[in-house]
Length: 344
Image (cartoon, rainbow, N blue to C red):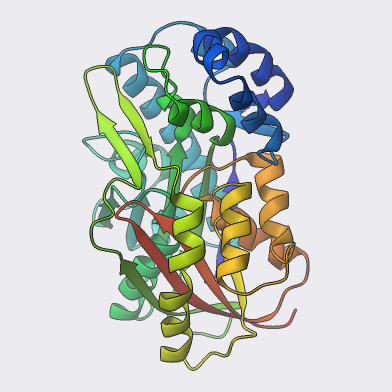
Protein backbone atom coordinates (compact mmCIF):
# COMPACT_ATOMS: atom_id res chain seq x y z
CA UNK A 1 0.00 0.00 0.00
CA UNK A 2 1.45 3.34 -1.06
CA UNK A 3 -1.01 5.49 0.90
CA UNK A 4 -4.44 5.62 2.45
CA UNK A 5 -6.85 8.36 3.52
CA UNK A 6 -10.09 8.71 5.45
CA UNK A 7 -12.81 11.36 5.17
CA UNK A 8 -16.21 12.14 6.68
CA UNK A 9 -19.10 14.29 5.45
CA UNK A 10 -19.70 17.77 6.88
CA UNK A 11 -22.71 17.29 9.15
CA UNK A 12 -21.95 16.40 12.77
CA UNK A 13 -24.44 14.23 14.66
CA UNK A 14 -23.84 14.82 18.36
CA UNK A 15 -25.07 11.78 20.29
CA UNK A 16 -26.71 13.94 22.97
CA UNK A 17 -28.74 15.75 20.28
CA UNK A 18 -29.63 12.44 18.64
CA UNK A 19 -30.97 11.13 21.96
CA UNK A 20 -33.29 14.13 22.30
CA UNK A 21 -34.71 13.56 18.83
CA UNK A 22 -35.19 9.80 19.04
CA UNK A 23 -37.05 10.14 22.32
CA UNK A 24 -39.76 11.84 20.27
CA UNK A 25 -39.49 9.70 17.13
CA UNK A 26 -39.47 6.39 19.01
CA UNK A 27 -41.83 7.55 21.76
CA UNK A 28 -44.31 4.67 21.36
CA UNK A 29 -41.64 1.96 21.23
CA UNK A 30 -39.69 3.47 24.13
CA UNK A 31 -42.91 3.57 26.11
CA UNK A 32 -43.09 -0.22 25.83
CA UNK A 33 -39.37 -0.76 26.19
CA UNK A 34 -37.95 2.21 28.16
CA UNK A 35 -34.59 0.48 28.58
CA UNK A 36 -33.95 0.80 24.84
CA UNK A 37 -32.86 4.40 25.26
CA UNK A 38 -29.82 3.08 27.12
CA UNK A 39 -28.52 1.82 23.77
CA UNK A 40 -27.54 5.40 22.92
CA UNK A 41 -25.67 6.04 26.16
CA UNK A 42 -24.01 2.60 26.24
CA UNK A 43 -22.95 2.57 22.58
CA UNK A 44 -19.58 4.16 23.35
CA UNK A 45 -20.24 6.87 20.74
CA UNK A 46 -19.97 10.63 21.28
CA UNK A 47 -20.41 11.82 17.71
CA UNK A 48 -20.96 10.70 14.13
CA UNK A 49 -21.15 12.36 10.73
CA UNK A 50 -23.81 12.42 8.04
CA UNK A 51 -24.17 13.54 4.42
CA UNK A 52 -27.39 15.28 5.44
CA UNK A 53 -28.06 17.58 8.43
CA UNK A 54 -29.98 16.09 11.33
CA UNK A 55 -33.12 18.06 10.37
CA UNK A 56 -33.29 16.12 7.07
CA UNK A 57 -34.31 13.03 9.02
CA UNK A 58 -37.33 14.72 10.62
CA UNK A 59 -39.40 14.15 7.47
CA UNK A 60 -40.36 10.86 5.78
CA UNK A 61 -38.08 10.09 2.83
CA UNK A 62 -38.84 7.81 -0.09
CA UNK A 63 -36.50 5.74 -2.22
CA UNK A 64 -35.83 8.47 -4.84
CA UNK A 65 -34.95 11.00 -2.13
CA UNK A 66 -32.65 8.55 -0.39
CA UNK A 67 -30.99 7.66 -3.69
CA UNK A 68 -30.48 11.33 -4.56
CA UNK A 69 -28.82 11.87 -1.17
CA UNK A 70 -26.70 8.74 -1.63
CA UNK A 71 -25.46 9.71 -5.08
CA UNK A 72 -24.72 13.27 -4.04
CA UNK A 73 -22.91 12.26 -0.87
CA UNK A 74 -21.06 9.27 -2.31
CA UNK A 75 -19.78 11.24 -5.30
CA UNK A 76 -18.36 13.96 -3.07
CA UNK A 77 -16.76 11.56 -0.58
CA UNK A 78 -15.29 9.41 -3.36
CA UNK A 79 -13.51 12.40 -4.90
CA UNK A 80 -12.31 13.73 -1.54
CA UNK A 81 -10.97 10.37 -0.32
CA UNK A 82 -9.39 9.44 -3.65
CA UNK A 83 -7.66 12.79 -4.11
CA UNK A 84 -6.35 12.73 -0.56
CA UNK A 85 -4.92 9.21 -0.89
CA UNK A 86 -3.43 9.86 -4.35
CA UNK A 87 -1.78 13.06 -3.13
CA UNK A 88 -0.18 11.16 -0.26
CA UNK A 89 1.05 8.57 -2.76
CA UNK A 90 2.43 11.37 -4.96
CA UNK A 91 0.29 10.23 -7.85
CA UNK A 92 -2.60 11.67 -9.87
CA UNK A 93 -5.88 10.16 -11.01
CA UNK A 94 -4.32 9.78 -14.48
CA UNK A 95 -1.92 7.25 -12.99
CA UNK A 96 -4.71 4.94 -11.82
CA UNK A 97 -5.09 1.70 -13.78
CA UNK A 98 -7.76 -0.07 -11.70
CA UNK A 99 -10.52 1.33 -9.47
CA UNK A 100 -12.28 -0.82 -6.87
CA UNK A 101 -15.39 0.84 -5.41
CA UNK A 102 -16.96 -0.77 -2.34
CA UNK A 103 -20.38 0.35 -1.10
CA UNK A 104 -23.54 -1.36 0.19
CA UNK A 105 -25.67 1.55 1.39
CA UNK A 106 -27.03 2.74 -1.94
CA UNK A 107 -27.50 1.74 -5.56
CA UNK A 108 -25.74 3.57 -8.37
CA UNK A 109 -25.88 2.56 -12.02
CA UNK A 110 -23.65 3.86 -13.56
CA UNK A 111 -21.49 3.12 -10.53
CA UNK A 112 -19.91 5.83 -8.41
CA UNK A 113 -16.44 5.75 -10.00
CA UNK A 114 -18.02 6.18 -13.44
CA UNK A 115 -20.06 9.15 -12.19
CA UNK A 116 -16.99 10.93 -10.85
CA UNK A 117 -14.42 9.78 -13.45
CA UNK A 118 -14.32 13.04 -15.40
CA UNK A 119 -14.25 15.30 -12.35
CA UNK A 120 -11.56 13.21 -10.69
CA UNK A 121 -9.52 12.86 -13.87
CA UNK A 122 -9.52 9.09 -14.29
CA UNK A 123 -8.40 7.73 -17.65
CA UNK A 124 -11.08 6.40 -19.97
CA UNK A 125 -9.40 2.98 -20.06
CA UNK A 126 -9.09 2.52 -16.29
CA UNK A 127 -10.55 -0.83 -15.23
CA UNK A 128 -13.58 -0.46 -12.95
CA UNK A 129 -14.60 -2.99 -10.28
CA UNK A 130 -17.71 -1.93 -8.32
CA UNK A 131 -18.46 -4.20 -5.33
CA UNK A 132 -21.84 -4.32 -3.55
CA UNK A 133 -23.25 -6.36 -0.66
CA UNK A 134 -20.25 -6.89 1.62
CA UNK A 135 -21.57 -4.54 4.31
CA UNK A 136 -19.28 -4.02 7.30
CA UNK A 137 -16.77 -6.55 5.91
CA UNK A 138 -16.29 -4.45 2.77
CA UNK A 139 -13.23 -2.55 3.95
CA UNK A 140 -11.16 -5.67 4.61
CA UNK A 141 -12.52 -7.63 1.64
CA UNK A 142 -12.15 -4.60 -0.64
CA UNK A 143 -8.48 -4.23 0.25
CA UNK A 144 -8.03 -7.96 -0.36
CA UNK A 145 -9.65 -7.67 -3.81
CA UNK A 146 -7.52 -4.63 -4.62
CA UNK A 147 -4.31 -6.36 -3.57
CA UNK A 148 -5.15 -9.41 -5.70
CA UNK A 149 -5.70 -7.18 -8.72
CA UNK A 150 -2.41 -5.37 -8.03
CA UNK A 151 -0.55 -8.69 -7.91
CA UNK A 152 -2.13 -9.74 -11.19
CA UNK A 153 -0.75 -6.60 -12.86
CA UNK A 154 2.64 -5.78 -11.30
CA UNK A 155 3.36 -2.07 -11.56
CA UNK A 156 -0.29 -1.11 -12.06
CA UNK A 157 -1.81 1.46 -9.69
CA UNK A 158 -4.94 0.17 -7.97
CA UNK A 159 -7.22 2.65 -6.21
CA UNK A 160 -9.61 1.18 -3.62
CA UNK A 161 -12.40 3.48 -2.40
CA UNK A 162 -14.81 2.37 0.32
CA UNK A 163 -17.92 4.50 0.93
CA UNK A 164 -20.88 3.88 3.22
CA UNK A 165 -23.73 6.27 3.98
CA UNK A 166 -25.48 4.32 6.71
CA UNK A 167 -27.52 7.23 8.06
CA UNK A 168 -29.66 7.31 4.91
CA UNK A 169 -31.31 4.06 5.98
CA UNK A 170 -33.01 5.82 8.93
CA UNK A 171 -36.77 5.23 8.70
CA UNK A 172 -39.68 7.07 10.30
CA UNK A 173 -42.14 4.48 8.97
CA UNK A 174 -40.37 1.42 10.38
CA UNK A 175 -39.75 1.47 14.12
CA UNK A 176 -38.31 -1.75 15.52
CA UNK A 177 -35.67 -2.54 18.13
CA UNK A 178 -33.17 -3.07 15.31
CA UNK A 179 -33.97 0.41 13.97
CA UNK A 180 -33.36 1.96 17.39
CA UNK A 181 -29.99 0.18 17.68
CA UNK A 182 -29.03 1.27 14.15
CA UNK A 183 -29.96 4.86 15.00
CA UNK A 184 -27.56 4.71 17.95
CA UNK A 185 -24.62 3.22 16.05
CA UNK A 186 -24.33 4.17 12.42
CA UNK A 187 -22.60 7.09 10.73
CA UNK A 188 -21.24 7.97 7.28
CA UNK A 189 -17.67 7.95 6.03
CA UNK A 190 -15.24 6.91 3.32
CA UNK A 191 -11.68 5.71 2.95
CA UNK A 192 -9.31 5.18 0.05
CA UNK A 193 -6.08 3.23 -0.46
CA UNK A 194 -3.54 3.28 -3.27
CA UNK A 195 -1.90 -0.07 -4.01
CA UNK A 196 0.94 -1.10 -6.28
CA UNK A 197 3.20 -4.16 -6.52
CA UNK A 198 6.86 -3.38 -7.20
CA UNK A 199 9.30 -0.91 -5.73
CA UNK A 200 10.26 -0.41 -2.11
CA UNK A 201 8.31 2.75 -1.34
CA UNK A 202 5.40 1.05 0.43
CA UNK A 203 5.52 1.14 4.23
CA UNK A 204 2.54 -1.21 4.53
CA UNK A 205 2.55 -4.51 2.68
CA UNK A 206 -0.64 -6.51 2.19
CA UNK A 207 -0.53 -10.28 2.43
CA UNK A 208 -3.15 -12.95 1.94
CA UNK A 209 -6.83 -12.51 2.63
CA UNK A 210 -9.51 -15.00 3.50
CA UNK A 211 -13.24 -15.02 4.20
CA UNK A 212 -15.30 -17.43 6.24
CA UNK A 213 -19.04 -17.76 5.56
CA UNK A 214 -21.14 -19.47 8.20
CA UNK A 215 -23.99 -21.47 6.59
CA UNK A 216 -27.55 -20.67 7.62
CA UNK A 217 -26.79 -17.19 8.92
CA UNK A 218 -28.41 -14.95 6.31
CA UNK A 219 -30.66 -13.40 8.96
CA UNK A 220 -27.84 -12.20 11.25
CA UNK A 221 -27.10 -8.96 9.38
CA UNK A 222 -28.10 -7.24 6.17
CA UNK A 223 -30.77 -5.19 4.43
CA UNK A 224 -34.39 -5.76 3.59
CA UNK A 225 -35.61 -3.77 0.57
CA UNK A 226 -39.03 -2.17 0.03
CA UNK A 227 -40.42 0.85 -1.88
CA UNK A 228 -39.29 3.24 0.87
CA UNK A 229 -35.67 2.10 1.08
CA UNK A 230 -33.36 -0.25 2.91
CA UNK A 231 -34.44 -1.72 6.26
CA UNK A 232 -31.78 -2.85 8.70
CA UNK A 233 -31.55 -6.54 9.62
CA UNK A 234 -29.60 -6.94 12.85
CA UNK A 235 -29.95 -10.01 15.03
CA UNK A 236 -29.83 -9.69 18.82
CA UNK A 237 -27.71 -12.85 18.80
CA UNK A 238 -24.79 -11.13 17.00
CA UNK A 239 -22.48 -10.49 20.00
CA UNK A 240 -23.01 -13.99 21.35
CA UNK A 241 -22.49 -15.52 17.90
CA UNK A 242 -19.19 -13.64 17.55
CA UNK A 243 -17.98 -14.69 20.98
CA UNK A 244 -18.78 -18.35 20.30
CA UNK A 245 -17.87 -18.70 16.63
CA UNK A 246 -15.14 -16.23 15.62
CA UNK A 247 -12.18 -17.97 17.25
CA UNK A 248 -12.07 -21.04 14.99
CA UNK A 249 -11.76 -19.27 11.59
CA UNK A 250 -9.41 -16.68 13.11
CA UNK A 251 -7.10 -19.43 14.36
CA UNK A 252 -7.20 -21.17 10.99
CA UNK A 253 -6.23 -17.95 9.24
CA UNK A 254 -3.32 -17.33 11.61
CA UNK A 255 -2.08 -20.87 11.08
CA UNK A 256 -2.39 -20.68 7.29
CA UNK A 257 -0.28 -17.51 7.21
CA UNK A 258 2.31 -18.71 9.70
CA UNK A 259 1.25 -16.12 12.28
CA UNK A 260 1.19 -16.74 16.01
CA UNK A 261 -1.36 -16.04 18.70
CA UNK A 262 0.32 -12.78 19.70
CA UNK A 263 -0.29 -11.19 16.27
CA UNK A 264 -2.23 -7.97 16.61
CA UNK A 265 -5.80 -7.82 15.31
CA UNK A 266 -7.03 -4.51 13.91
CA UNK A 267 -10.80 -4.89 13.89
CA UNK A 268 -13.90 -3.27 12.54
CA UNK A 269 -15.67 -1.75 15.59
CA UNK A 270 -19.24 -2.86 15.00
CA UNK A 271 -20.33 -1.68 18.42
CA UNK A 272 -19.32 -1.79 22.07
CA UNK A 273 -20.88 -5.22 22.67
CA UNK A 274 -19.37 -6.64 19.49
CA UNK A 275 -15.90 -5.37 20.45
CA UNK A 276 -16.22 -7.04 23.85
CA UNK A 277 -17.29 -10.24 22.10
CA UNK A 278 -14.31 -10.07 19.71
CA UNK A 279 -11.92 -9.63 22.64
CA UNK A 280 -13.46 -12.64 24.39
CA UNK A 281 -13.37 -14.78 21.24
CA UNK A 282 -9.74 -13.95 20.49
CA UNK A 283 -8.75 -14.28 24.16
CA UNK A 284 -7.62 -10.68 24.34
CA UNK A 285 -7.48 -8.76 27.59
CA UNK A 286 -10.53 -6.55 28.06
CA UNK A 287 -9.79 -3.12 26.61
CA UNK A 288 -7.14 -4.37 24.18
CA UNK A 289 -9.03 -2.96 21.19
CA UNK A 290 -8.50 0.63 22.32
CA UNK A 291 -7.99 2.15 18.86
CA UNK A 292 -11.24 0.52 17.76
CA UNK A 293 -13.10 2.02 20.71
CA UNK A 294 -11.64 5.47 20.05
CA UNK A 295 -12.74 5.38 16.41
CA UNK A 296 -16.18 4.14 17.45
CA UNK A 297 -16.43 7.02 19.94
CA UNK A 298 -15.46 9.69 17.41
CA UNK A 299 -17.17 8.39 14.25
CA UNK A 300 -19.64 5.64 15.14
CA UNK A 301 -19.97 2.52 13.02
CA UNK A 302 -19.55 3.66 9.41
CA UNK A 303 -19.75 0.07 8.17
CA UNK A 304 -17.05 -0.91 5.63
CA UNK A 305 -14.60 2.04 5.86
CA UNK A 306 -14.44 2.01 9.67
CA UNK A 307 -11.65 -0.55 9.89
CA UNK A 308 -9.52 1.69 7.67
CA UNK A 309 -10.03 4.51 10.18
CA UNK A 310 -8.76 2.15 12.88
CA UNK A 311 -5.77 1.21 10.72
CA UNK A 312 -4.98 4.88 10.13
CA UNK A 313 -5.13 5.58 13.85
CA UNK A 314 -2.88 2.59 14.64
CA UNK A 315 -0.29 3.83 12.13
CA UNK A 316 -0.39 7.34 13.61
CA UNK A 317 0.16 5.79 17.03
CA UNK A 318 3.37 4.26 15.71
CA UNK A 319 2.31 0.66 15.15
CA UNK A 320 4.70 -1.52 13.18
CA UNK A 321 5.05 -5.24 12.56
CA UNK A 322 2.55 -7.87 11.53
CA UNK A 323 -1.19 -7.60 12.03
CA UNK A 324 -4.50 -8.97 10.82
CA UNK A 325 -7.28 -6.70 9.63
CA UNK A 326 -10.61 -8.24 10.57
CA UNK A 327 -14.26 -7.41 9.98
CA UNK A 328 -17.65 -9.09 10.15
CA UNK A 329 -20.40 -8.59 7.60
CA UNK A 330 -23.57 -9.95 6.03
CA UNK A 331 -23.59 -13.55 5.02
CA UNK A 332 -22.73 -13.94 7.98
CA UNK A 333 -19.06 -13.53 7.09
CA UNK A 334 -15.71 -12.97 8.76
CA UNK A 335 -13.06 -11.33 6.59
CA UNK A 336 -9.33 -11.44 7.41
CA UNK A 337 -6.34 -9.77 5.76
CA UNK A 338 -2.68 -10.07 6.76
CA UNK A 339 -0.58 -6.91 6.70
CA UNK A 340 3.01 -6.02 7.58
CA UNK A 341 3.97 -2.48 8.59
CA UNK A 342 7.62 -1.42 8.34
CA UNK A 343 9.19 0.84 10.97
CA UNK A 344 9.08 4.57 10.28
